[in-house]
Length: 229
Length: 386
Ligand SMILES: Nc1ncnc2c1ncn2[C@@H]1O[C@H](COP(=O)(O)OP(=O)(O)O)[C@@H](O)[C@H]1O
Ligand SMILES: [Mg+2]
Image (cartoon, rainbow over all chains, first blue to last red; front, top):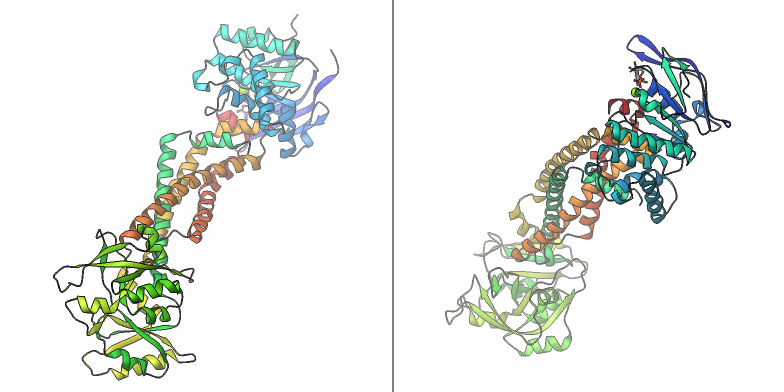
C-alpha cells in the first residue's frame, strides 16, 4: 500500500450526557493508506458514526489529532472545515439524504454550487457522475420517483462529483435488500479499484464487509483488526 | 444567482401552504397600496391646491349659493387682486360612472386666477367666441378620448334646463395643461353666461368665489374684511384658504390617515405571524436536508442566506402581485370617485418604493429566526436524529 491518506493518533471523543461523561472513543489510533477500502464493524452505539464524523471533519475530537491528506482537521475552524469538506470528502448515508425537491441531476450538482464552475460545466460534471453510477437516464427524476437502490446511486454520484479522494459511507446498504445492496457494494468496489477512491465504510453486515480490503472492529472505544484474505 | 434554483424549489416544497401564505401577503400589500393611494389623494386635495388663493363660501354650508352681486363687493376689498366665481355643476358624461368636476366660469377671469392652467391663446379666443364652448384638461381628454371640435353632452344631477332637460351640450374649444406637477386636470370648464341663461334658477347666484391676493396682502386680514362685509346679511360668508377648502371637502371621509395606519398595522402584524409560521415549519421539516447541505460544505452564512432569501421571495411574490392588484383597484375606485379626487387615485412611486422596502423588511423579520436556527444547526446532531 502507498503512503497514508489519513491518520488518527490518540483520538478520544467524550460526550456529556447530563452528569455522565461517556467516552465513545478512547485514545484510538488508525492509519488509512491511500487507495484503502476499509470496512468498520461493531455493535450499535459503539462509535462507528462518531469515527466517520471525525474523519470527515463533521466533528472534532476531545483529544488527539486527526490528519487527512496532510490537513490537521482538529485545529481547523468550522468555516475552514466546510471548505475542506467540499473538495476532499464525499459522504454516503444510510437513508441517502437526497433533497426531495431537486431532481437527481440537481442533487448531484449541489456540491458544485460551491465551486466557480459555470452552470454548463456544473451540469456536465453532474451528468458524468450520474453516468458513472449508471443512472444517466434518470437525471430528470425526483427522488420520490426512484427506488431505494437508485436513490443511493444518486447519493454516491453526489459524493464523487467534486472528485474527492476520500469516500465515507455510513451503513450505505443498511436500508436495501440483499440484491440491491450487492449492486451498491460492487459500485463502491469499482470506485475504489478503477477510480482510486479511498473508502471507509461502516456496516454491521458481514457480507457487506467482504467487499472491503480490510475490516476493523470498534469495541469499547478501541479498534481491533481481523483481517480478511 | 446559482442558489436560486434551490431556493425556488424549496419555496414551493408545500404548494398549498406557500400559496396561502402568498395570498395573505398579496392581500396585505393590496390594502397597503390602495389605502395609501386613497390617503394621498385625499390629503393632496387634487386639482384645487395651488397658489395663494382664498375661497369665499356660504357660512352655513358649502352647498348654499351666493349672490352674483358679491363679486364687485369682494373686488373692492383691499388686498384682493382678482376675484371670480365658480359653481358645482355635478354632471356626468354619458354614464353616471363618468363623474368629474365641471364648473361654469368666466373664461379670462378663471385663467387669470389659475395661471398654472395653460391654454393656447387661439383656443381661448375660440372659446370666447362660442357661448356653448368649453375647455377640458389634458387628463380628462385622455381619459375619455376627447379632442378639440368634439361636441359632448353633460347631464347635471343638480340643475335643470329651462326647456326641461338636464343635459347640456358643449363644444370643446380647447385642451389645457397644468404646470403644477401634483395637480390633476380631469375637469371641464364652460361659460357662466351660457349656464346662467339656460338653467331654471336664473342668473343671480354662483357657487363660491375664488380670489387671488394682491402682493403682500395678509390672507387673514383680507378674509376677515370680506366676512365682516357680509355679516348680518342673508348670505353670510366664510373665507378660507383653498387648501382648507379642499380639506373640508375631504373631511367627509373621516380621519383616513389614522384608520389606514390602524388597519395596516393589524394586517401586517397578522402577516408576520402567518409568514413566520410558514418559514419555521419549512425549516423544522427539513432539518436533515439543511444538515446535508452543511455536510457538503455549505457555510453557515450561506445556509442563513438561503433561508432568508426564501422568506423574502415569498414576500416579494405576494407583495408585487398585491401592488399590481392594488393599482388596478386604485384606478377603478379613482374613476368611480372622480368627483372628489379629480387627480385620480394613484399608487405613487413613493408607495411602491416603500412597499418594496416593507417586503424585504417583512421577509427578514419572518425569516430571521428560522434562518438562524438553520445556520446554528449541528450537523452531527441533525443527522443522528434524521
Ligand atoms: N451528540 C451526541 N451527544 C451525546 N451522545 C452521543 C452523541 N452522538 C453519539 N452519542 C453516543 O455515542 C455513542 C456512539 O454513537 P455512534 O457513533 O452513533 O454509534 P454507532 O454509529 O456505532 O451506532 C452512542 O452511545 C451514542 O448515544
Ligand atoms: Mg451509526
